[in-house]
Length: 216
Image (tube, rainbow, N blue to C red; front, top):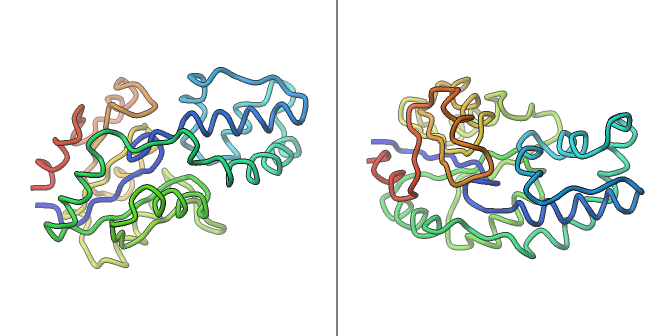
């Protein structure tokens, strides 16, 4: 039985792709750059917003100065619009309630910037007492560096062997591997199953209910 479940946020707990796409396209338009179809953003997200902007910028414009310009446009807009179209994946709210009722500790480890991660979790899951909600923070390496998982393990005092990490991307699977916790890939997120399979996670699930069975 697992005593701690750490979840990725975007593509795992919440489908946020429409708001991320809308906000990035807004920033690109404001700066005179071409925009992208919503579906294209599924392969741009996952490594933090600076990497998202680098991927979204056209060839020849992928430099630090332009990334910062896009960021300056994106953050104020996304802070207002990050819950316009986002929603929890079906079954996720019930799963969190059930795990919490069983005394399982719950945490979030995301590459989304910290204030947005906190806002979205508070907005969509107000009744869930997460022991930690960590996004990308100054001085803390982004996933797949295992630092964020190690920090959560230290807070909870739970061993890696008793911890399940759940995510939708190769970045998440590599994070779990690097942290030496049990890895679980979900197929309802932003990345294809083949990306998960390439990392040989301990589990790949297609239904939310399967996570509860793994925890037990």
